[in-house]
Image 1 (cartoon, rainbow, N blue to C red):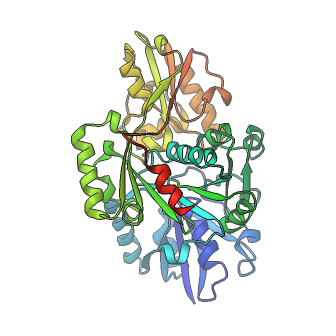
Image 2 (cartoon, rainbow, N blue to C red):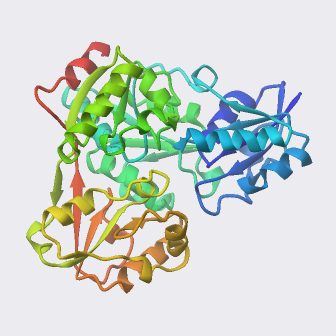
Image 3 (cartoon, rainbow, N blue to C red):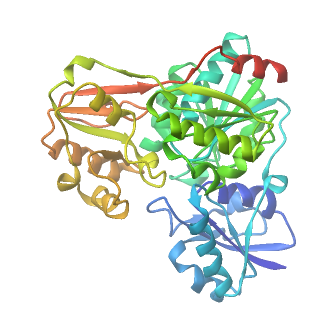
Length: 435
């Protein structure tokens, strides 16, 4: 029996375990390690989820302890199970594992994808922040307008009590409060709820799938980061970001999504240099010549746009897009510049606690604030950072209205962004083929 450690970030790692390892007599999973998400190490994957083979559950350690854990548990295999990392990064991890004596493994679709009884449309990306969520909203509207009943299943983000998050169904803001959702979760769930679409997420994605199938004609897989779908899909859409030209073939597992996809949507054409768009188009054709290519804009709308001109503004953007997504700007920054803001304030002198630590870790950030909010403490630190700044106006470039979950003591406006096909729309026609 091989002894296994699964490297993860409270998402793909749990899914791979549930699908492949939980009841597999050939393996004993001795530990998970945790990365990317703060404060999730030191917990235990509980016995109620781990199954009969694991009466004490499975411990979760910080990834930094991996070499010692391999020796301590006499580990045979280490399974890498998180996403949005460069090839350079992932091979350094392989070197660490191999040097400690274990095999390094990356699992593929055959052993990790579940089969649905309904039609499945998967929406993935080459990097986090490419535009999956706005595309999922666009596709869900196309389907509902065509008379289809839709359920969105979102990539996992189980940062709270794992036993309470096995299957989570979100149809109202009250559901978000009941499950004590973080900012990161709310950013993904609220826009679907606003559109009248039910969203599922959690830990056990087979149980989630079976419940969603009972109330939907079509399942929309709304991916996280640039991870692979958890379900076999009838139509696979990948979003490609020309603002990060070259990343489509240098980040894991974004290139896998690109090579698997039926449709590649090149998003944000309206704010990208034509040469960037052409470069990613050539990369799509080279990697997946059979994929249908759709060009799309990401039009930005702003509450009270006239209120921004001449103001000193603090721009708050989606956290993961700026951090491990490595973007140095977002929709809020673009809106501030286009609408004549006098200054984009550098929030670093006013950052506190974990927000200050975020700037130290991601030193490519300067004149904008990532909306980090993985728990109550971090949300409070984000609020203090915003309120301590000398901004005359706060521009909220996150997918949710931060004013719903914190008290901002300054005038604030929201920036929203959607997907808009360029030229004659053809996505509906391509979707209709599978229905």
